[in-house]
Length: 157
Image 1 (cartoon, rainbow, N blue to C red):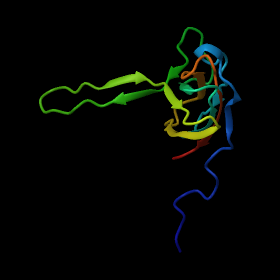
Image 2 (cartoon, rainbow, N blue to C red):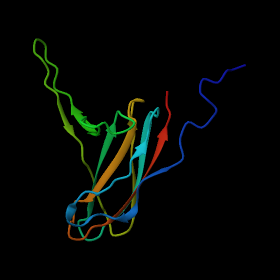
Image 3 (cartoon, one colour):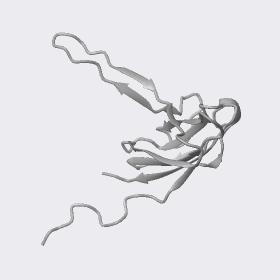
Image 4 (cartoon, one colour):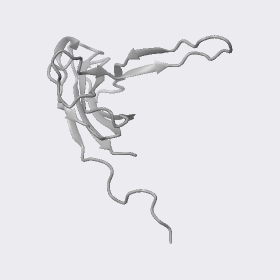
């Protein structure tokens, strides 16, 4: 008899709306009030998105923020942008310089119709209590497109 090495029960959550499908703010402004989503104890997040450009050269930016706190704490920074790290080149006898920078992700439309894409899975490491994703039009700020974002979490191990 072989014993299962993984749980037979679903480890993913139902889809959660991070941004309802709607027009992006005008003139390239970020969403004014992004939706906060609780993520305590969850390991991975995949974002599913649908973007329709508003005009030629349309593109959408999105930026993911996380908080290690279940609620804002007065006087303490509560939200942190996800970032990218670029590893330096390893050489014997010298320290390595690596770079880290906040990350803004851009999706550029390839046509006039609705286009769907995914981003992730993002490893939350069971340490992010809350998340939000803000978005803006970045390609043609005079003709903002529409963007919808849903997320699916995985409990992972």
